[in-house]
Length: 134
Image (cartoon, rainbow, N blue to C red):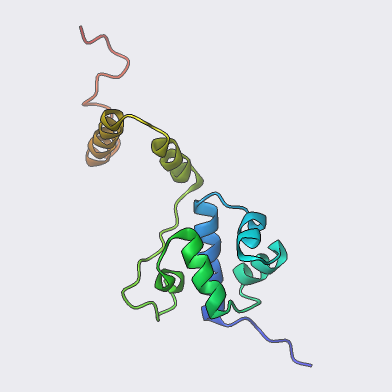
């Protein structure tokens, strides 16, 4: 019997599900529980070895509060849906820490600092870090 190789679209959709899951800090077990399936089934979806049904795709998109089309990002058939951007673990950690800041003024200051640093190529030359500014 011939062993069927995973379809490229199934692999890409599975990769996008995994990317979303990891970026949101959700375990395979937790996602599986929310969808009423096992974590092993989530693994098969993420590897592209099992196709994800339309109803499960819709449930996954709802769970992560994204458009179903975004799950097809990178397949060539995603249309104008939002693209999933892979972030490093460090970037995800920074974003999670940022989300925990309660003060709007502090969040604004952090955004301003990041914008300034990124505009300066990450240089601290324009900041008096570690210097007495009095």
